[in-house]
Amino acid sequence: MSPLESFEIDYSSGLPVWIQVKNRIAYLIGSGAYVAGDRLPTVRALAVDLDISYNTVNRAYMDLEREGYISTRKGRGTFVAERHAVGAALATDSPVELLVDDLIRTCSNAGMADDDILAMVRARLAQKKPVGERA
Image (cartoon, rainbow, N blue to C red; front, side, top):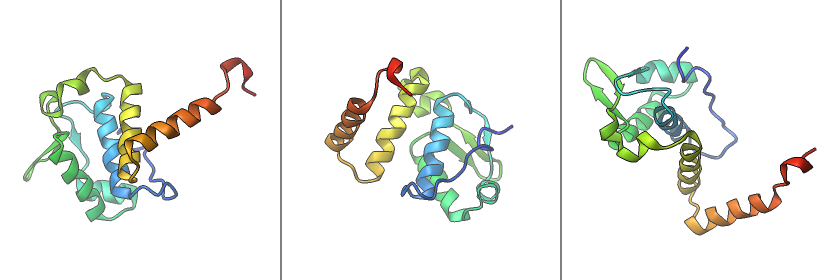
């Protein structure tokens, strides 16, 4: 089973579809679901699987390539880039750190300032009940 098979677009999130695709693939690479050298679905195949535009997937792939997550080889396909191309920190990030990175990226892409992101997290933590008090 491909790591992307369970991925579904959330049209109610307000986040552009291409960013959702990009964030999901970056997360899958960072979490180790895809490793260096793994072949990703073609742009057309992923667009069909997700029932979205070819241009939407292409934009996500172009951004991932620009950031060093993937590399495209003309006529051969799209592959996960070597770890050193992605960055040394990525190799040591835990799944929780990757989720935090995804949260920050999503909030930033939605136009939130760093201080607003921190305030939102603090407010949510303040609302959190201790484990023993949950219903």
